[in-house]
Structure formats: structure tokens, C-alpha cells
Length: 625
Image 1 (spheres, rainbow, N blue to C red):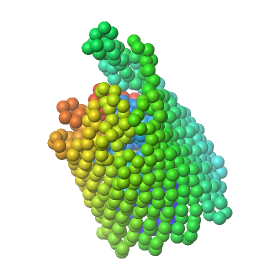
Image 2 (tube, rainbow, N blue to C red):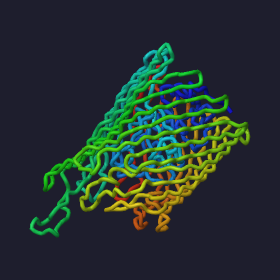
Image 3 (cartoon, rainbow, N blue to C red):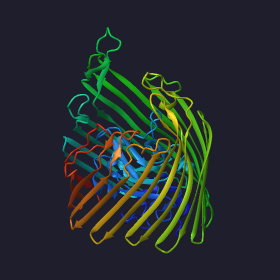
């Protein structure tokens, strides 16, 4: 089995060197390297986890209007949301909750401390170089929030060479406009990339019977930057940021006393004149990487994630209001990579972070810290690989928690690799779960226990030439699952079983990629299905080149699911077809066009919230060569 040099592993795992990672095609050959599964740089075929890679080439080919369009229907991944374009979105991995899915941006831990989930809706596709999706528990490596899996996003980056400019402008249905410009380059010791983009749309009317009938718009302005510099003694300094701010409109009704003289006349007073969320979503990081010895590299980083929102209503009988929720996570990491032998690698370190909450809501507590110590050991024994990880977390609110994972792999043939794993994980309750003040219809419960899980997985991967097929079966049991209103409570157990199949093939001018997920997600206390989990989902991406022309299609199909825990509100299954085409006008100029939801299907992924009908978009892109 091929091994990557330790120094390369360090660079890959922290971001700047990923621009030089070989990635020859979307069939994910042996040269495709990922770093998220174990914090060790490995090819996709070497890893002992279920991994999906989406590179910049694929992002540009698929032409997504929203980041979640890249994820929906992938193996083990499902997306639901309260409408398109900047509206609340949930991304579930292997049937777990959306806040069981950890989001990292260039190593920075993201997510709202109040709600617990990541703001997937605000991520700008144009600023993203690469996405790595790891399915299965990773709490023993990353700590809380990784019961279902981890998705890591790497912002666009530079490589050695003269400065090169990229730019784009586009528009389409719903009065949508987008534009952006960036520059990237580098020298032997310095790499840099800086870019800015803007997306704006009138959107659609998300809810028919709530608020007004006007479309609910969205705008997002994003800045991204990466800079790294290697000193003559080998020490490397680096920093990166991804910053977004904007506004997302939504529908809202005002409630109050219909008759001020009658305390029992509480009801709907009518729609607000306007309702919107002003947001800031940011990941910031800076650090130093030190080659201590030929076999030991050490890295120290400081980071901060910000998830801030002002929920504003205007007009109405009572004149509107502003609800502000600002959460920040200050992070300190110390990571050490050691090469213990030709076939053994060890990663060990400390992650410490503090969550801070500020706003108009008076939480019983407004900050808490977590300190985690972790280690990952991987060794190769002939055709067999073993990997073990162990982590100890000390949380200010609930105390100590230890999690672990062990995985085995065997190279059965040159093309076939088998794997098996077992892992434990946990999820800390959110500030809303624990500390939200009693407002009548909801209040926090400080006696909640962390959610805990254990997961078993068997998998096999076939990879030869331009073809790969990956199959995995798994079972996860989640104890103390948090649910309920007005008082959150722990339920005894949820059980999730599933089968995932993912594959890709390149044949001549054709490029194909497909995935299917079969899921059985059950609340063991009630016997009901967990909400918004389709038992069957599938996705197919197919593209073909004709010289300067290329055409492609994406088909997504999902079976029925339920919108509520009692399985009374049924969401119908649906199928979507999206078409795309591109023309290489010149070596540096390209014109792209898409038509989404070609069949103009009416569908919902969350009850009561509309999704777009047929829509068309065009984009002109310039890339200096």
C-alpha cells in the first residue's frame, strides 16, 4: 500500500497544500487524497472510512445555486429545508440529526451554539475548492457533534506560479444575479488566494398561508482568503478566512391578543410587513507549523467561528421586533504528527474551545468551555491495516466523556479492499436545550444528558482504472436522543440501519457517478420512523463532452417520509431532473447554462415550505491560464 510522506500529510491535513493534491478524475482513483477521516493524509482507497470527495472541477460542472445542491442525494446524505436560497436547511448523514453532523471549514469547527446545527444555507459554492464528506462517527477524533459524520470544506487556494485572475458573472430565474472575482498564485515559499463574490435573488414565496404572498429574497456577499509562507528553517506560517454576510427574507405572522380586553383571545393578528434575517457567518484561522525532527511535525493554531443573526420583523399591529442571536467559538489546537516507522503513523493533540452566546435572549448561561485530548494510531501489517482513535473531553456543563473507535482493513486483491469498524460518539446538548428561558411555549432543561451512540460498519471498495464502487452497511444506536417541546427530554434509544452504494466510471467522453441509500431509522420507544428520513434515495450524475461542448444531467429520487415524530404528516416522494451544458468559447472563457427541476415538479422537503419549480441560469466564467 502506498504511504504519504509525513511532511506531506501535515500540509494536506491543514489545507494549503491541497491545491497540489493529484485528482485526475471523478471516479476517485488511487491518487485522490483526503485528510478528514483520520487527520492523516490518505488516498480514498487507503482510508478505513466511507468517504466522498467533491473537487472544484465537479463543483463547476454541476453549477449549484446553493451549497446543499452539492450534497443532496449523495450516499448516506439527505437535505431538507424551509425553502430555497438562504432558508433554514438540515443536512443529515446516515439518518442522524442535522446537529449530529459536524461542519469544518479549513479545520475551523463551525455551528451555532444556540441551535447546535451548522448554517449550511450561507455557504458560498463559488468560494469552495474541495469538499470531503466522511460518513460514520468521528467523535473520537473531533469531539462532540460528529455522531453521523463530518463534512470539511476547503476554501479556494493558490499554488506556485504567477498571479492568475478568475472571474464570473451570471443570472437567471427569480431575478437572480451573481458575480465574483479572485486572484491566486505563489512562489517557492509563499502561496496566496483572495476572492470576493456576491449572490442575490428575489427567490420564491416560501409559504403560501403565512405572511405575505411576495417572494422571499436572499443576498450573500462572501470574502475568502488563504496565505501561507515557509521560512528558510522550514517553519511555516499560515492563515485563512471565509466570511459571509447578507440577508434572507422569510414569511411571518404576528400573534397577540385579538381583543386586548379578553386574555383568552390570543391569536393571529395578521402578517408582518417584512420579516428577514441579517446574518454573519465566518471561519477565521491562523497558525504555525514546525518540523521538530525528521519524524515529528507540530502545529499550533488559533481559530474563531462566528454564527450571528438578527431576526427582524417590521410593521404589524405591534410594530415588529428584533431578536439577536450571536454565537462565537474561540478555538485553540495543538497537533503533533509522528512517523513511528515505515508503516505506522501517530497523530496526537489537544483541542480546546469556548462557546459564547450574546443577544436579546437572556440565557441562564452564556458561555462554556470544552477541552479534548485525542490520539489516532494507524499501522500496516502486510495486507492488513489497523486504526484506533481515543479521545477524552472535559466539558464545563456535563463533565468528562471518553470515546473511541477501531477500524480494520484488508487488501483482498489489487482492486478490492474490505473494511470494518466500531465507534462510540456523543453530542453535547445545545444552549437552547439547556439554558433557554421559560417563555411559555419552550424552555431549556439543565438536567439533559449528552446524546450517546455506538456504530458498527462493514464496507468494501472496488477501484480499478477509471472505475470505483463503494458499498457499506451500518447500524447506529443513539441513546438519550434529545427531543420534545415545550421541555426538551432524553428519549431512550433510536436505531438506524442502512445500506449505501456509491460508484463512478469514466468511459471515453462520458463521466458518470451514482449513489443509493436504503435507510431504516426508528424511534425504539414508539416504533415510529424518525422524521424527514426517506427510506430510499438515489442520485445519478451523467456528463459527456463533445469537443468544446459538454452536456450533463443530474437525477435525484426520494421515497416518501414523515414530517413529524408521530408519523401523521406524510411528505410525498419525488423525482427531480436537472440539465446543464457548457461551451468553451476560448481557452480562458467558458459559458455555462443550467435548467433545474426540468419537469417542474411540486415537492416539499419540510412540510408547508415550497421549493422552486422549473428555473434556468447562465454563467460566463473567465480563468486566466
